[in-house]
Amino acid sequence: MSQDWDAGRLDSDLEGAAFETLAVRAGQQRSPEGEHGEALFLTSSYVFRTAADAAARFAGEVPGNVYSRYTNPTVRTFETRIAALEGTEQAVATASGMSAILAMVMSLCSAGDHVLVSRSVFGSTISLFEKYFKRFGIEVDYPPLADLDAWQAACKPNTRLFFVESPSNPLAELVDIAALAEIAHAQGALLAVDNCFCTPALQKPLALGADIVIHSATKYIDGQGRGMGGVVAGRAEQMKEVVGFLRTAGPTLSPFNAWLFLKGLETLKIRMQAHSQTALELARWLEGQPGVERVHYAGLQSHPQHELACRQQSAFGAVVSFEVAGGRDAAWRFIDATRMISITTNLGDTKTTIAHPATTSHGRLSPAERANAGISDSLIRIAVGLEDLGDLRQDLARGLAAL
Ligand SMILES: *Cc1c(COP(=O)(O)O)cnc(C)c1O
Image 1 (cartoon, rainbow, N blue to C red):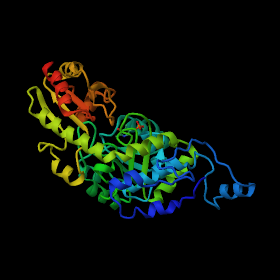
Image 2 (cartoon, protein in one colour):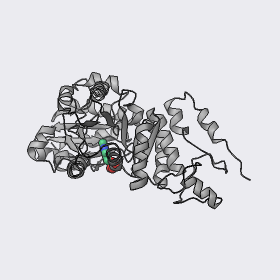
Image 3 (cartoon, rainbow, N blue to C red):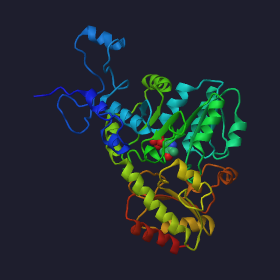
Image 4 (tube, helix red, strand yellow):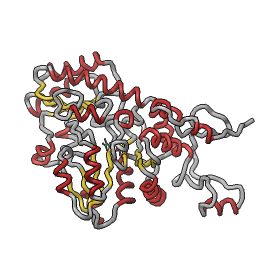
């Protein structure tokens, strides 16, 4: 009944294939059933033919699965596909975006090392460094994302890792990744980029000189608000260490979520293009509305780093933030007056979301820290989904009318 498929052939057929092709085909290994879609291997362990076979597999003398904390075929397919899309040797899947950052630092840094993290990163990332890594003797400083001189000046002899998000959330600030990679490398440090907001469909940090890419697959890689997951990707030399940590500590990706993300990757490029197109139209429209004081979106000519964004990204992503006249009360009135857009701080979904960063994602910062991060009380962030542009404009117009 079943056929033996030559798995190797599937890969060699993809030599030189384009992003869109890799997104639907890379990494697939057919089982003897000859299924067309990617198989979902819901199994925690694997059987061996004989006791000697088990011993050889445990000793690493013959390849093969042992236990799903170590390897799982569905997870491996996802890892191979992401590595192909980021254009690198290896990707390692994790249980969430946060566990990707945890695994990277735990496997590549030690007590006494110094890490530079851009000031405007995801809130939990700052907590992870401040509350936990510092307790284990890792020194951390936070240079402003775009200021290359500040990164240079913050380097110490023990600086091992630079970590940035570009573009930043919610203000869409960028760093010149190629220039920052040069500074890191001159220092003997690695540059890691959280590529969550762009995904490899819009930005390839490794091709620009970064060493490691981090993802929250929960966001645009899934893209449909269904599952949690993360990725660390880069050269085999570093990924070997990340794999070692994950196998031992255990925050590995569930095969079910890997299967969801494989389906997400198949439509990643067309989704990211659609998100970006609608976001750009909305950003331009918002910029012309009375009551809107400033729009932050790298696709706008008015964005101070628009030229860099055009060089470094193929489009500008889904996240648009803007300031309205009238402070917090006006921002809240705007948000409450919308009727379709979801009031939630999440992003990376098909459904457009709206949030007030100063009292949600950045609410735990002191007023001075918020001011320093550029998060004013009048700032609203939207993460544009896949709904119709006209319907979104109509809903945002309700917000404008409430100002
Ligand atoms: C959401 C997010 C994370 C954390 O990912 P989880 O999957 O929620 O753990 C990290 N970085 C960025 C930029 C994010 O948006």
